[in-house]
Image (cartoon, rainbow, N blue to C red; front, side, top):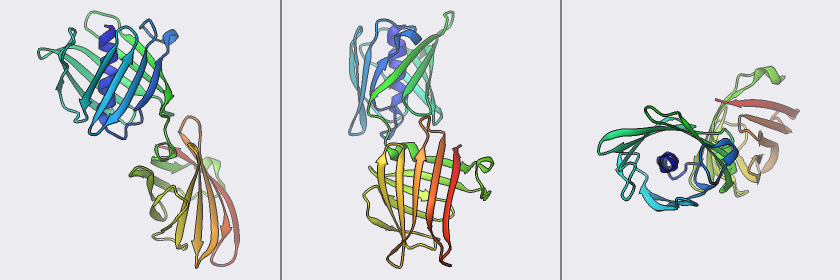
Length: 259
């Protein structure tokens, strides 16, 4: 059972190179069915992930990021593994022995991506719960801001019903779609805007939860936004100050909820 739960976690992390679960993890013994505590490391290796689990047992292997059924050599409990994505926070893993399912595992990542809970189910046995806490490789601003956001009209004066879509683009970039759109990197350089009264935007990462946006029109700064994502990753606050084309000064705060 011990190895089943550990391999279930590994399978969930195969979903893709940008998966925020890649990093360093420590078992939370007080909340887990497993003992003694173990440490887990998942790193990218070209198109594979390299997984190292320290403790008893010790496991060290690499696997393809293809999401298909694969073989698991040298493990007596099962020799095949298959997974499917339920949603952006959950994965189902089936462990097989010579084609027969021996365990089903559901992994659920917390909204702030700092805790991972694995529930292992086997016929005729009580479910086993494993909880891991992240100790390294925390999500960057690109990861935290990525997603679909809807304006919380109960917490803002301007009830515009805005919706935003923010996607990670490359190693340190973002693609923003809303009432205007752009693709930019967090490097302080100017990037062109589409469908906007402003011409360019420059992004500066303050920390993993905070990004500053500076907008220019005719080579003059016209607007500054500060975007802050809450610790649990479910709420984003945009504070705006600037000057409209009419010369009117604006200062507004909008609250968005992640969908």
